Amino acid sequence: MLRIITLNLNGIRSAWNKGVLPWASAQNADVVCLQELKAQHADLSDEMKAPGDLHAYYHCAEKKGYSGVGLWCRRPPDAVIEGTGDAEFDAEGRYLRADFGKLSVISLYLPSGSSSPERQDAKFRFMDIFYPLLVELAASGRDVAVCGDWNIAHQEIDLKNWKSNRKNSGFLPEERAWVSRVLEHGGWGDVYRRLHPAATDDCYTWWSNRGQARANNVGWRLDYQLATPALAASVRQAAVYKDQRFSDHAPLTIDYEYMW
View 1 (spheres, helix red, strand yellow):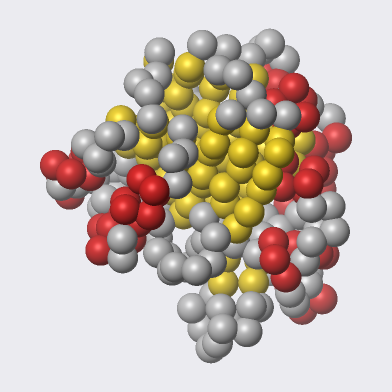
View 2 (tube, rainbow, N blue to C red):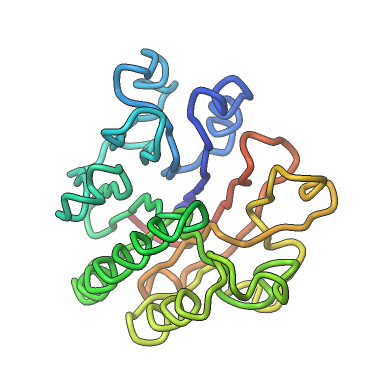
């Protein structure tokens, strides 16, 4: 079995103080994909660089307190690849890939466009750059899982208040159409939706810090694991963990019946 967890930490130091490592260690995950480290290598403690019996890899943003992705791996990878080759977004620390034999696991933090029109334009630029890479990965013959915070709710069932968010970043028609294109023409499967095609309230992985959004479960499904066909077909279990709160996101755990 292969178990992969993805979690946006909203700051590794904050999540660390909330017990994310003991929880992750107890899950017996093979790979934990982390996003939004909000830290540079100099900010990471020795324990963060060597978390228990896991092997840790980080791609930090050049800007302090911003973005960044990581991988905690049960076994050391054969290779680790930082970035997509695009200077603008590699400086933001948004893509980290680990290879294990024929399997590749990628931690992704797709930009958010909610803070300004300029960041929405950057989000669209990233999507334009990233789509050909997704097509290339799907055609590579490797089994690949791209796990992380995609910052897009794909369908109406993926957020509570979809009617009032149709003109907001994260649920724009262009963003949703891009996800559809990735799934329908890019060769990828939305693993959670393969098991839970109609789930609504249980699917959310992010809640605003405003008001009582989390208490009232007014959420969005922003954290996905997309997989190439053979890997996606091997999925056996998918669950969002909400009993503890490590950040404004919740961990998504997927079990695959996959020999690796």
